[in-house]
Each structure stands twice: as structure tokens, then as C-alpha cells.
Length: 355
Image (cartoon, rainbow, N blue to C red; front, side, top):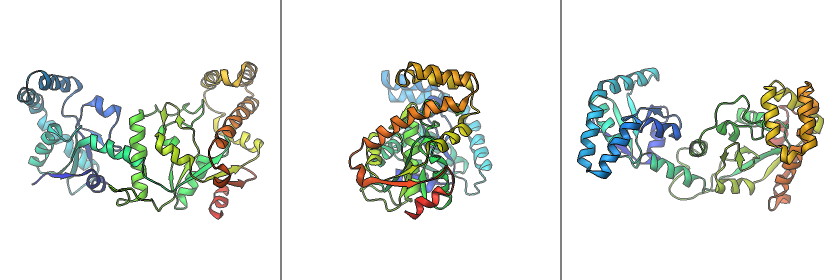
């Protein structure tokens, strides 16, 4: 069989639904990778270091010899692991997609082995580096964004999901970031991805939503509207790419205007059962902006089990900061669509669609 070498656009389109193997070292994979790719390292982190040092300090040939010493004993195990992956994903076609850092010797070596065994192997020209370039370039493209806004407790995340159920294109930035945006946003959630991995997740979502042929080498307007929640540029420890965030700030915003008490009740229902000590720690992280007295009162109410009154203090704080962020954008008067809502509920989705 012949190993096919695919450009990043060909790789993205053809690999959908098939196993993608990242043959870089475990450390490289853990830091960031092609979303959905399976770690399939040719070398351990230490072995990669040895080969790299030989390449730099001695010669390419010496590095290859050392690499073969590491590779040889693993060949059977790697073939069997590839078989397990294909069988687990029930791919009768035996198509496998492989990439390394630059599309060089590591992916070529693994591709040769798997091709020899009988897999249909496809490698990525330029490797992971070409994917990263694709991701960063995608943030410069002109998308048709629609921003879902509203004070804390407005149920924006739930409405995004409702919009998706009704056929709208949505991106849940907080889900990609594993963080809900506030000081309490990481409680009960998995560890956040690295900045690079967050970029990769967002870039691939943009690609998938605009269709396999939408993102090309030339800039063009994306025809399909994409809904996103109004966010600060920073979500926990990760940041929305500056160019993409600027585009979000220039996009029309649908603001859910919901009474304070309704939002407060929604927050108590959503966050009230979270670990109390972690919530108190979170209050401490915003104490300099919340103020000494309000920090003390919000903490005391939580310790007494009076979650609602603690949240009342915190909600007033977040309302103030959101109001500032909402109005700190150019041309708000032409971007803002106010959606009057009596309470936090799924029916609010219909009001947005009707506008």
C-alpha cells in the first residue's frame, strides 16, 4: 500500500470519524494535541531527549541509529495497539491518520510500520506544527458571530444548549475551558486545558461549524451564524485569542434582561450544593475588589448556611463588573438587542429566535 501525505485541509476532512495517532512523546501530547487524537508515542520523553541531543551534537545518522534501537523492540506492541484502536472504534476500512511535530522521521517511521502491516496510513504534511498554524490563522477569519449576553445567573449556558437543540451553531467557550468564568468557575470541574490546547479546541470547533470547505487558504465571510456566550477575554487561566475576542466585541449582542431575584434563585440552585470551603476560598480570591466588609459578610453567611444572602452580595458584585464590561465596547447602541425575560427558563430561547 502507498502512504498518503495530506495537507492540513485534506487531513482535517479525511480524518473525521477515523483514528488519529499522535506519535510525539507523552509530554508533547499532554501539553497540547490535535483534539480527539490518541497518544501513540514512538519515543518516551527521555528517549526523545537522547535522540534530539545526538542529532544536534553528533549527526543525523547517529540520531537515527539510536532511534532504531528504541523503535525496534516496540514494533510488535505498536502494531497490536493500533489493531486494538481500530477494533475499538469499529473501523472496517483500517484507515489510520498519523502526525508528529513537523511531519518528519517520527511519523514516517510509524507510518512505514503500520503500512507494512496492512493499515491504510495517512500522514500530515508539516505535522502538528501545520495544525497549529491553521488554528491560529483561523482566528483571523471573519465569522458571523452572535453574542448571548446577560448578568450572572441569566441561564446563558442553558440557552446556548437550547439553541443548539433547535439547530443553531453554538460554541460553549466555558465547556472548552473547563471553567464557568467567575471566581467559583472551577469548582467541581476537571483541570483546565493548557492555553495551546484551548486554542486547538476552539479552532477545531470553528472549522467543524463552518463546514469542511468553509475555511480555505483565502479569507472569506462565514455564512453560518455562530452563537457564543459573552465572556471576559480570560476564562480561568486561559485566554480567548485576542483577534477572535476583538471580533466577539464587535458582534451583535442579545442581552437577557432578567430580574435580580430570579437570577439569584437560579444561582442558588446551580451553585448552592458546591463545596462550602472551596466557595469560601473563592470569595477570598476576589476580596480586594469585593471589599473587606462584603467579603466578611459573604463568608459569614456561607458559614452559617445562608447561601442565598451570601450569593446576594456576590451577585451585586458581579452585576457591577458585567455592566462595566458590557458598556466598555465601541458602538454598543448599534449592537445591543435587549430581550426582556420574566424568569430564567428555556422559553427565553424562543424570544431570541423571534428577534
